[in-house]
Length: 109
Image (cartoon, rainbow, N blue to C red; front, side):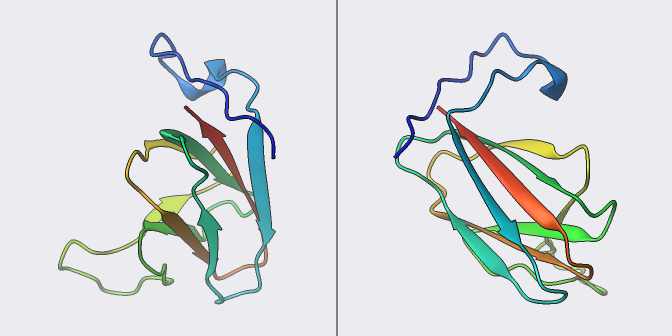
């Protein structure tokens, strides 16, 4: 297994991320949720998708392609540029899309 590299707190935007030491990817089928298991020691993840705006993530739950969700539990959208998240204490990350993208998760300490 690859080592998870530390993420320095001096990084202020995602364009400055170091080369990750632990990266997983999933080829999604439209409307089918897949999960990433967070590796031991990971505290940060950068997730991005080859689909521009139709990919969603949910932490420690199962992602759905959202319709009207007004109780605060909707999944978070990610796209080509991706998003970084602090994930200490998170065990799984679920991803889903209405398209068929490849989703990449880059983990850091």
